[in-house]
Amino acid sequence: MHGKAGVIESAKVAPGMAGAIQQNPSIAIMRIAASFANIFLCSPLTSTLLGFLLLAPLAHGLPVSGLYEQRVAVENESLAERNRAYQVAFRRMILKVTGNERWLESARIRAAAGNAGDFVQAFAYTTEETAGRVAGQRHLEVQFSAPLINQLLAAENIPVWGGNRPSVLIWMALQDAAGQRSLLNSETGAEIIDYMRRFGEERGLPIIFPLLDLQDRRNLSVDAIWAQDELAIQAASSRYDPDSILAGRLLFTATGELVGLWQFQFEDETQTFDGFDSELESYLEQPLTRITSQLAGHFALVPGGRSEQSVRLRVDGVRDFSDYSALLEYVRGIGLVRAADIVSVDGERLELRLDLQGGADQLFDLIALDRDLLPTDSGESVDSPLLHYRWMR
Image (cartoon, rainbow, N blue to C red; front, side, top):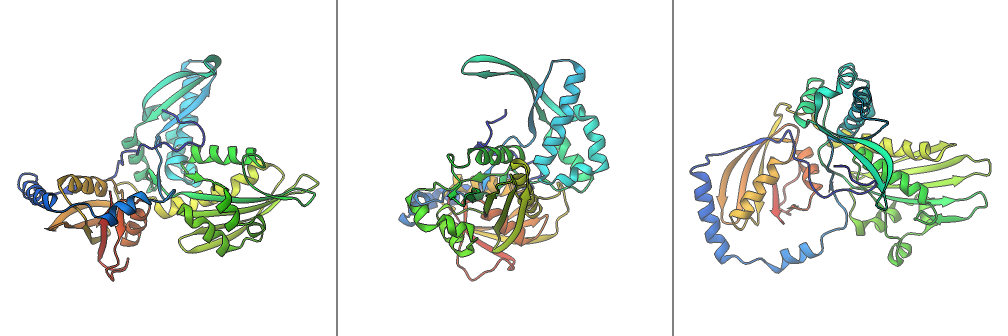
């Protein structure tokens, strides 16, 4: 139920707010299946498509599982201790699902935390083991009901951050009191990396680190990171194709203070902000919390919100009925989509009308987190009522 710190599990969480696909199940599907059967027999997979699949990027949006699950250390299995653990797990879960600490201050959320057991779907006690030997620490693993939690959040107009989340590539340059600089890696900053990975696991933020191989070191020097060279950082990061980039510099002063500067690149915008603290974890927590809140604010949606806009989605490369089914399942999994109607099928092209909970720009950003749909150069823009893609799965 609960993955190790820093590990992003591959299974996607089933979205609880996906729009239903509206169609005639008895006639439309049969006609489309027959059409795709003919297409499949005469349309082989092109070498261009195969080449793209083989050259898929290392990063990009990543699925985060276990959004409604938590693991809390307990002293015993008494009812009082279980209720205490429920409340701790509930607050952690709300923070992970929403991505923003401010929602914990909601009066309704605070009241719900006091009755966290009402939202529990399942729980289990586990004992921590080390190298096959029982260490003795007991944990309560809690799975909350996603529908009940989403109902609670919707009642307060609190947005939910879905399971497909933007990746964050982190570069850091460290300087000691003697003036020696080094790139952050497992040798120079193991404690920093461990904390960042724990933060990513607890908050559902897909954090990745560069390989720091010969190519990375040739493309980006420690001095370039220290100077916050925006273009150099961006160019060196391109091989990982991340959704966002966090680059930091950290000076360990002789008096024990931590002084630094952070640069965050996201959506063609760059922000720079200071860092200062006397404790390493709190120094690192500040920028990570800031960017997590920003990313959640960009992608999160209020469950069950009303439709605000309709757009047409044109998809090429839908070769057979298997592709058709997979595409509809994919569209169904986008939380922004309230409903989808099939407009037309023409060869390998499928066109849908989507009723959105938000705007077309949000849909564009959510699709960009995946590699299942690739934008085509059809002269259309994100502001157009028609979004044109190629199915790549």
